[in-house]
Length: 67
Image 1 (tube, rainbow, N blue to C red):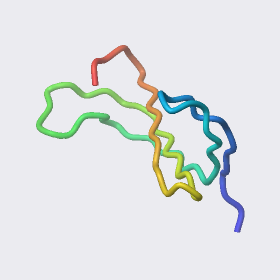
Image 2 (image 1 turned 30 degrees about the horizontal axis):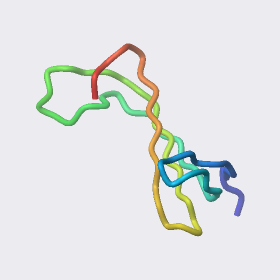
Image 3 (image 1 turned 90 degrees about the horizontal axis):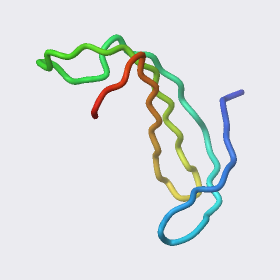
């Protein structure tokens, strides 16, 4: 099976650490949960760090917004 994968370095207060795993790309018509009056489409990239069993989410929006 072929999948989108990643390798990188995460920088945090504890210092740099290697991250690697699979990535999932998704698109949504509304980044906010209903019944929010704000509707902003966006793209999501979910990175699953396999060795550490952690997930990271990156969000790209079509306009500036406070999340």
